[in-house]
Length: 204
Image 1 (cartoon, rainbow, N blue to C red):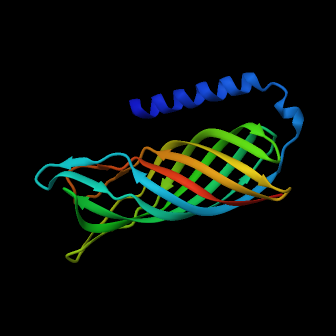
Image 2: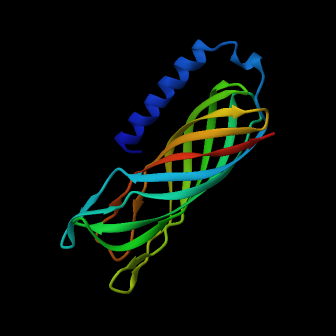
Image 3: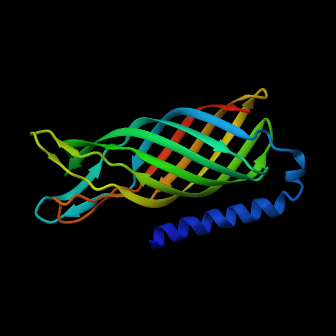
């Protein structure tokens, strides 16, 4: 686990611990739902780039829009188990020039700790484990570079605003410690994507 990942988890645990301590009676208020199906748009912004010797001083993926679908099951008022799939296509840029594109297709599995859980407003935070099915890099000049899939970790937080008993608007933020690993490249290309999600949810 990298130092960056450790710091992020420490911050999330501190926030979660403080909020849980401040809301001792929240669980008595009742869960707003048992299951949730959600979907919407996502903006993905890679936070890292890499230097590849003999290729480019800076190789990075572009920020792009994609879409996400997911489901959450809440066995208790405070705990949710979430599975979500995201799909987005990014330009691969070398020294600021697009040389091809790659699809980012992670399956994200999150353990959501609901710090606030009410019909009109809900807020959660927790760790994520992700299986990323990277596509090959399709080069603009023809040809492609194979990319290995990877299993990695991250963290997420989100909130929903209830529109009656069943529907809600949902906002989310997720970060993954991810990189592109191709047998054709001398080193990994760090991506570390940050996902900003906005959509609708059906709760029941």
